[in-house]
Image 1 (cartoon, one colour):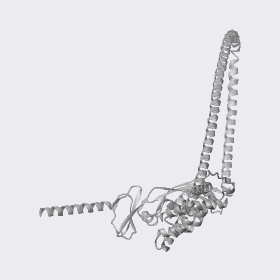
Image 2: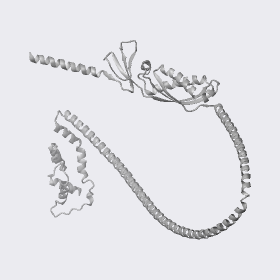
Image 3: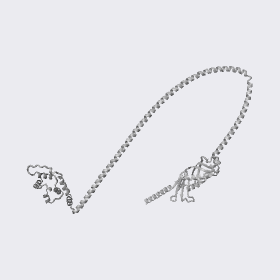
Image 4: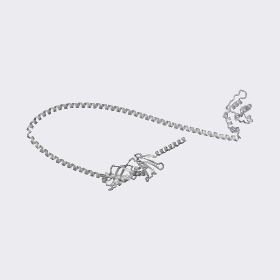
Length: 474
């Protein structure tokens, strides 16, 4: 009873842990740079629930989730030939920065319009909306307003473009208008007009300042002349005393000047001497350094030329070696292909001969089998039939051994026994294989009357008959 209770407790604990793990796996946390969109059966009128941060539990089967990225998207908008209020075509290149909004009502719009789209698709959609709204803004403004009141233009862009982007859940973060140009040159003319006006105003201010300066200068000159005249009248009283003192001072000054000039000449000469010596020393040192630098340059040039020559020789030798290797490889490949072709031809020839020989032997075996079958299965009878078929050829071979012998030119010497010619003929024929012996080796035999009556069929013929025949021929 205790064991069963423990098993039940363990099963309940295991089931509880399994359920906890399952619920934990369905608890989704939302990063700070994303929006968690839970869709499916959300239990309200909204098509989805959006969480910017925090976490949410996603029920299995009836709910699912995805993320919307809050990363800003940069869009380059190069608006060309947009009509202004004055029907002048202008070009406004600008850069927009947009992103998915984290405001509650805009998050729902983004979940309904942008969930599942890639960043490139969102950028393309926002680009089209921005282009259309910028054309609308430019159509309601004059060229002067576009050129001078940039704040009003940017504010209008924020209002119109921002409202349209809100419909798909996007928010306009920044607008940077780089330049405004028109094809007729009207904006350039306005700029030139403003520049000319500024130049003219500056010229007027300069003229006014110059006039004020001239007046002040005249007044200062007049005051100077009055004061100079007063000073001159006072100076005439002590002019005589001043002349005496001036003469004495002049003499002393001339003496001091002469002494100073002499001392100056001495110092100048000494300084010129030192300067000349320093220039000569510097020139000699410069020549020495130039010579050393030129020598180093020549050594470096010689080393470079030697290295270049060695490199050219190494490269040329390497090229020749590669050429030889390639030529040897090509020749070996050609010989290998030639040998392979010859070997293939010889093999094909021998295969053809073997196949022909095999076919010939096969046909001969089939013919011999038919012959054995015709002889009621007796191979010896079949062989005898074949030997009889070749008997004519065998006889021709026997007679061919002596057929070319010119008997009229044969001279036989007898020892007085009278058997000279018969012995010669019997010895001549004895050198040929006997037909009867050949047939006996093959398991066949000729009729005995034929063998005894024909001296060509046996070695032991009637010597008297041979002699008589030879005597008659003689």
